[in-house]
Image (cartoon, rainbow, N blue to C red):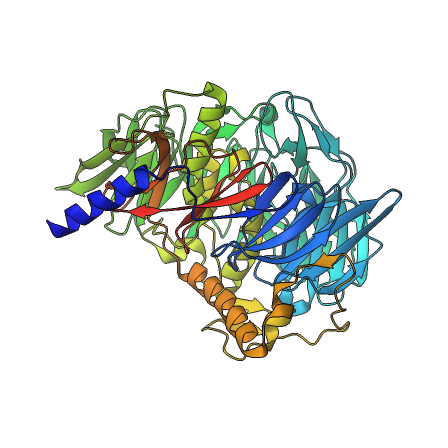
Length: 614
């Protein structure tokens, strides 16, 4: 009873302080973008400069004078402490790699022109591949295409190893879907590149394989990727000890990892959006829900079903075609059971023969994803509703349902965008129990390392991807506990349990240029500086261990709040466990599950709002 009274006191106090934030930082000019990093540091761009802000305290770690930067000008290199900054100054362009925590320049290249759209990293071989595009801005609704420019660099020094351009322009997608506004465009409608066995795999308008060290083209299979103007209609590449498996043109191809040549093809499957690999069998989802590049709306595309393919020869073992429109991602409840949801039903299949085992009407409007929580319950969700089901006596039983409608007040378009982002933020974090079979995700450290670097870009741009694609990507999303350090953090002896490497740099970090201001580390004595750096490494370690338990909904909060805000639903039990009192966050707001904060911008101020725990 005392606990209940204490909670009521806390929320009553908080309700009376709705306009107050946990901290706020004045960046002096209007904030254009902000994004989180794995170390708990926010990168904030204004029309005058770029700043690094401590996510826990709001302190400015450093500030660099840069005019004209936008969201695509800044790219963190996943699983490192480096940030890439693309700088255009008239006819001159350059790419800099700087230390996230100090702003020290690690290297600079004047040969790389354009913004970094996607990248691939092979830290063990000191390779960095950056995919660039120049002047990729336009209005939502217009068709914009650019030719991907490929540069392979030495990760530690920035020395160019080789470069190439793709055959032609490819269609791009906007970072947000605000009408009548000029926004940045990206290649997020394509699967990110991958470096494996010394080969670079690209997935723009087909698939292309290069020798990662020389740039020699090994194979090119050209086809339309964004079917019917929809994003991510082809599956992410996966691999085993022998082959890499790629989708396209309604078929699966097995590519020999050593030679890069096609071993076999499985044809006539349809649009292949998702692939799992279990016990030498590929399980393939065809059809589903995808986001339209033009306006960000969700659209269904068939044919809808799941197929099983033998990895030895490409033979189709069985096909299930009983899914209705709107097929979600699928998961393995256990080694022999596949779970998927369609427009009406939650369905379980026997993975050995494709026969349907269970089915129940989930009663969720436009279901978009299915996950499995720590209680082995199957959670089906859409934009405003999630329900949990469990198999009892060989039949489905609904355990709980939670629904939070979007606020009744406000501009409908803006409210809908905020509500979608709130739900999508759940999929930014790795570590939740998405499947009952670990081997489904690969099972090797190499697999986890590659997928970790490939997932970094979608962590901040969740507004431009639909929930089905996010859930599909997230089931394969890892944050590893292995990380090479290039900047000041490499001086920390206690790595907070991380498996860190300290590469021998070919070029020593330079002193900060005159553009760097307000460097916090310079004001700290050596002991406090080491403590601060150690805390950032601890943040990275905690992120690698994080379990995502809360899914947020933007809604009208109940009394005593009686305001608009966010409710955090615990996906383990369906309880409304968190409240965030932010009436109208901007469309790019971000939650920080480590520090229990929500970040939102208001003009030239960056604000952090506390997460109230029930």
